[in-house]
Length: 86
Image (cartoon, rainbow, N blue to C red; front, top):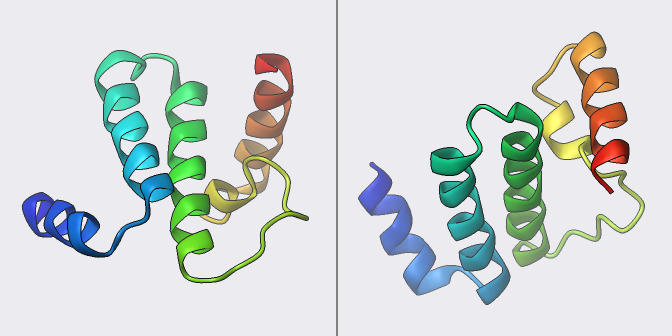
């Protein structure tokens, strides 16, 4: 399945999506113990994919896309962590 995804990215993904996917994979290998860095890389990957699809996410806060999959407590925790990472 991952090969199919990467094959599709090679053909259809923009440079931003390919970069975000590479960052995600590197984060998954290196930063898995730092869940916030990992989740930020997933959020950025989602954002790059949405940009490719024509969505304008300029008004979304960092972490909003990954937050869709999290409960309220986790969203608050992520939001605070992302602010501290800046």
